Figure 1 (cartoon, one colour):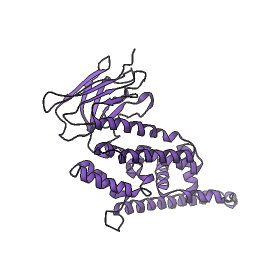
Figure 2 (cartoon, rainbow, N blue to C red; figure 1 turned 90 degrees about the vertical axis):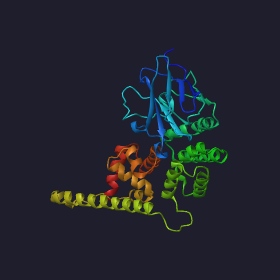
Figure 3 (cartoon, rainbow, N blue to C red; figure 1 turned 60 degrees about the vertical axis):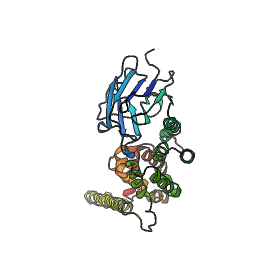
Figure 4 (cartoon, rainbow, N blue to C red; figure 1 turned 120 degrees about the vertical axis):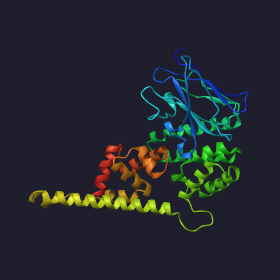
Length: 360
């Protein structure tokens, strides 16, 4: 059979310094015969495939087997990602595919003494399809977390707003339950990093703040703690302070100024065009603007207005996520709601509707 069962073994070396990762992946013609190991040094890198994160690479044999060895891991356990790339990609434009036949990565927690076994379902086509993980409690919990999170990447396919809202709320509650019922800190950190801060922080701020205290107590010197608290500070107040964070206020102000600037530009363009029209066109009475059309813009949230502005500017989902400091999955969720409110079905129609709204 061309596509082999994945069997990944992370074994402790007889020495005190080396790590060894052995395994077997399902590999077809569309996948390169190499497997990459990436270090997740920042929480924002959790789903970022970039050449500057790679710390090891190994050849994948015809039967899917490989061996990764080295002595370059820190003493403390950290997040790492193993992934394959498609033939058309390089280290500099690699993609992470979630779910389905193209699922090409896993997240694990490792140190130089790690022992882990991962076995994929041989009936699946993807390199890491329906895998199970044994040998480490941390990584058993990471596998449990993956079963919760991966289906959420298909939220963008949901067409009905109520169904989307209920699905997002269920995911949030499932992640909360996972975090509250788990005593190991890194799996819970991975879980809270997968929650939708934009959607749920306001209604569940105490939960996020309490977790920050838990993280500081467990990992006071970790860079992960610093990154989480920095993200927390963007969405919340500093503990004991009644003053909003300057960054959140500044971003909101800049967003408003940008929206106003686009509005003024569109008005000037409309006035110039009108001045160039013939007299008969000037005297033509335009159709009245309905209350429904005039209210569309008012129904958009601030975040939706920001995203609509960036869509109008031709930004991709990845570029929008980078500018707004959120995950791509969060941007997709907002765009889905935005399409519903604008009564459009794709990006081109959304850009056209944005232009129409600017001219009201």
